[in-house]
Length: 466
Image 1 (cartoon, rainbow, N blue to C red):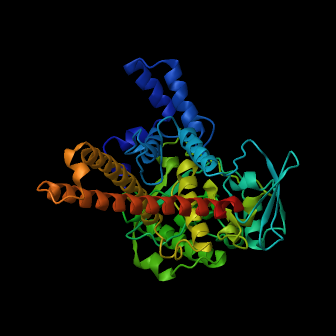
Image 2: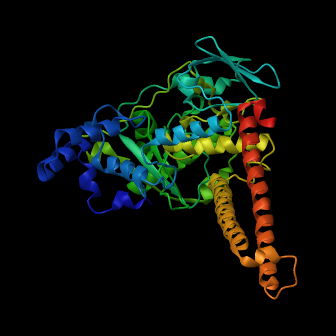
């Protein structure tokens, strides 16, 4: 069970809204109106939340804030699914752009893409709104799926009737009065964008279903899922009618949720062993806000727009023709929406591209993208150490050369003089340093060249192969 649900003061915080809590704190700490507005603005940026903080409990808001900002530092410290750079993400993006330009790459910004043509098996043609076209061997659509849906694709992208029906049928739910927290001792699930959407074709006649969120602690191997129950009267209340006690009610809800998971994953074609849902299960906690806080409904709003690319659903889990890759936030395998999901999916896609062009064995080997990041960091560290060694050796070389030139014995190198031995030792040491510097220079040039070729392959420019 997630400890914060049962922590001291949790009940009190869960019975007031964020707005009410802020007003209390303002009186205590004399917060300015600008400070309060900054908090409101921050929460309004979170996907799937209502536009008023009177509908979010202070407990839930604090948990969301903690999950996003824990262990955060200005140095870009990685937390589970969250990055930050000094000066903001824009600073990092600008550094990437500058690096591409130094390597001879072409960077275009503020260019709206209107069409993507991948009929040619060897290239992808991207058409911009201004009429210009760009050609690449592979592309990554790194925006959100709803935004990407406005792009014209040739050939048309694959679709699935199940997913089309699924997304078109979802409606806003503004009274998620019942939520359940289910805990397993292992993460048996595979989530997309931190949300499993209910399938309208298999909604139980009497049983729970709804959007599912992973709320597992970042340092835990347990799997903790939060389900917002939709259509409460039909899906949840019918279970309570057949239950004779709180215990049996919990058992009925647990069985219903497990059955729904099994049927949903089966329909979606996602490999999962049904027995794992039972074997790894620990407990279910039911949160019925109708009895816990009648005056403050647990509101959520989840409505993917119909007729958009999100309607392709699971059909876009893999690259199209190994040329079009999907890196939007909604494509994250797990973790929250927002920038965390986008970053995680970006690294997953990077591994997919590198595997397809043969620079890493396969993404199964690097299935844990944290290990993949560690390999990149290790290579970066080795490269930096090599540069440092080269600099040190060149400085040492310069020192030895100066010693040789300034010593009086330099003019007598060909003579059998007593002082010849120490000078010979300096010569030998100098030659060793020279050889090391040359070797390291070649290694550095090789690394730079490999990096340039990699970038060239990624962006489809032949300039790097010359």
